[in-house]
Image (cartoon, rainbow over all chains, first blue to last red; front, side, top):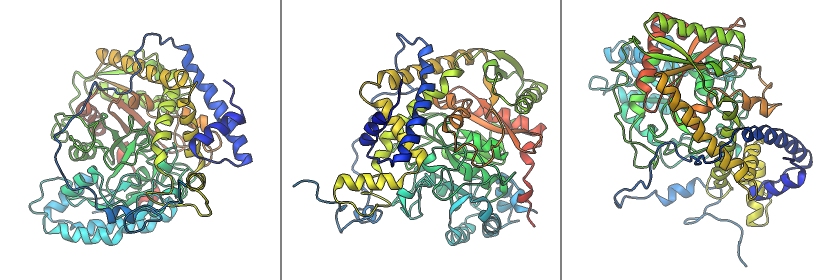
Length: 95
Length: 488
């Protein structure tokens, strides 16, 4: 697996991160090293092994649909960088 | 009585008997924090006034208190939400964010009668093995200030080790409680996945994260887990179980316990002094009546890559919520919504966090998903299966916690892959959702603490704590304190 700057640019774009020039080169080299090491997994034949996302066979956890108070809006907005009285403010997203 | 040298249970008993007031205990801890935190950098936020007010209020309830830990001051890792108290995850991107609610574990501790001294430093978003990636600067190891305390719960381990509070609440995604406990000479436990609510724990890798205690000894860990464990409807992965009475069932009797030594954990890459100390711990348990057997655990070479693929994948998804809109800090000088996201995330995350987000985005991206992410989930099943086989041959496993003792500050930052590899003994426990305990088992020739790890089957906390308690009845490694920790 080769990791080049084009690939790092592509995944940075998906991650909404902008790497500066030197940072991009360092990251490319480090990711190349890390991903090369991860290829050790190919030594183990896992054909037929079911991928495991959860160690306990717990499925469809259901609960009663009880109405409980939700968080206080003013308290939630107080933690935001730019709130107004009732919403999070961001630059205009649709024309 | 040297208050800061007591265990949490000893202090709790002294408070109950009226020998010490809750406020005196809180003041003693705050004095220790004032004297040492500048050097150790274990705390990000110290809530002195809150702690003293709370201590005063609690004093009236001492007589009727049910918990043996009532009134005992402690501190909380900074990735666990505390209402009205800054919770930063040691990241710039959360700014001075003060959550509008308490994590479920914080509620449980408050109901029990805990006094919080503040919030503990850590690796940014719990991503790191040395507590050096914090936006608030590195934590130092109380045993040697030039060395790292381990991570990511490094502030928690350093604080407990140096006497800045009697216990701490940390989180463990790949060893983040056990490894710093080992480097700082304290006892720490990552419980079975699903037994402690994660509601209010800022997520790193949700399928692996678990909250647990860092303490002076195994008995304290048992007492705290009795408070922390239990089903929580607010956490969908929380499990029903028989909780409570871990402390009550500590007998120190390990007669007939079968302890497995996985030979694959004692091979190349393990420091000789660490190996000798951990094997000597097996001898102590054998002398108390346990049977020690060697067995094979043939999946060790796959655990680190599988862990980092899964953890990074989940991190890339979990950390997408940090975008400068809903909480914390926002960059300046953006022109569009997309620009706001990019600028905030680029300037708000440190480089280790960016590395893991990028790695996670890569392993989940189209064309690579099957080769990396799906493969890692298959390896997870293989690791779980290997543990199941091991627990047919023994009751618990004894391994090192880390391949070596605490590294010098700065050594790990230059080589991320090297740092990842040092997590080899702790990550398999998270992949399989098992309980794991780290206990001090010796010191190397540099005077640095060495830790031994006990791993049990799901819900096996009771036996692990009993084995650790038995070990601590016959040894005094857990009682030693760093020089800097001696009150003047």
